[in-house]
Length: 508
Ligand code: C2O
Image (cartoon, rainbow, N blue to C red):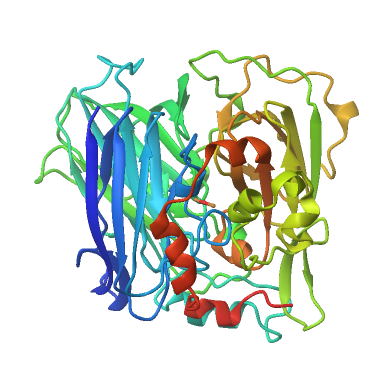
């Protein structure tokens, strides 16, 4: 295994990814799009992150990484670290012990949609599909806003927006452009790795005239499953094999189409599609893409992990979270789990774990505003999520992937055990799962990774309006094993300066 070292300077740069409007975006070492990272299982990653933004603090989260033994490298400010203030440097240092398709992004409030997000891959020395493909390609899907997040947030959490209508994106992007072409060779098979790195919109995705054989979901190899179209919510990833035709007389559209059901209104000028091209031959024709309703989206619930890990035995601990959107006294709209809208604590929750001795097992220590749940080492945990909102939400758990036991269709109401006499023997596992409108899901995981892990909706708007809970997993174990490096502690001294976006924040 290798040690991969980065010296990253985080700065503002100017970009115009859809050719419509220049805007400031957050770049690394003067560049945007950001570097696509490629690791191999077992690598040690050392990223020295220097914040040269001047006007905003920052952080980096390695989405989907287990960070086993390195919870303090997970990234979320107020949870496992203090913000990285302008002018300071902070080092992430961890070993990668998993494989598949992931991404890295700022976990500072409202920040990653301003550009600080990119896909990354981790090669598997024991890839079960070795020999089944010739080359691999990465693809990001993203929505795109012309305005910067601090000003959008100001308007979003506002008495003038009492229903909590989320800002509608201005465009959709693939690999941070609307001009993507992917040259291919006839007869070859490609492994495509797709991540939705967007703030809000899920995207329907298809490749005209080619079927996709899904082989990975959120870092978990799956048995091959054929799909014409996939639905990729914010933060979700899929890999699939696509075999090229032998005929080079035609090129084929690759389409990402934002799910407009998520939008309160659809501006008449909005192009909610992004079309890229699978190019067999530069001079060949490029037919118009077909319509979205010609395809059925693939149901991820049917996927089966290659590792055959069976359903964990019945839960020791069941957590029920009811989702609601509502107004607080000030008239602005917030998001709630069980009537609590998350507010960032002043001291990162992990640091509270490490300094409270035996009291660390008492959730009260963490403040009710963090929605804390204390988990025992190695217990089996069920999260039942009841969505009392009429929107879809992609929920993400840090530090784990979870088994998906049931995820009923729209309007199923609250979870009812009588409707579920059995669950799949080998359930699908992933780290980000959609719940349908006015419906529910039940997921199960083993608390075998001591740490403080967030569970939240990955729609940036909903994170910012409080749709977050905190899992404090095996706190006494953490006290025995973890020590916080000096530069992390120094970040707390420097971080009087919170991100500008906090001004619009959840300050009930
Ligand atoms: Cu993609 Cu809390 O993270």
